[in-house]
Amino acid sequence: MYQFSQPGPNLIASSSGRTLEILGRAGLRYHVNGVAIEIDSEMLHPPMSLVIYSDSIPMGTPLPASEILEETIKALEYAGFTVEVIS
Image (cartoon, rainbow, N blue to C red):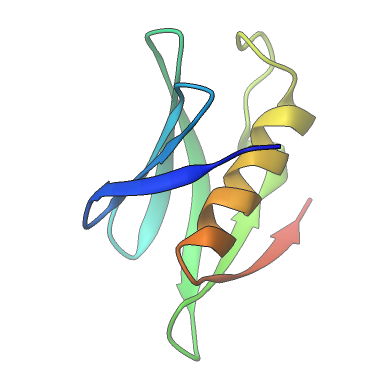
């Protein structure tokens, strides 16, 4: 089970030591083991709604894409976002 905190306005930190940056209206950056992974996303209407394009998570990352996606969704929900995933 992940526990989260928000050390900054666009930053969500996990008890696993990983962080998620929200890069404005489009894009997320997931940090794991010193590696930054770019994830395509877009803010939606109503506010605090977001779509993640799961196919944008690259292969060959330190974690399986499914684990990155799961933790990303949970982090965003912790921050108050409604999340939709599109493959």
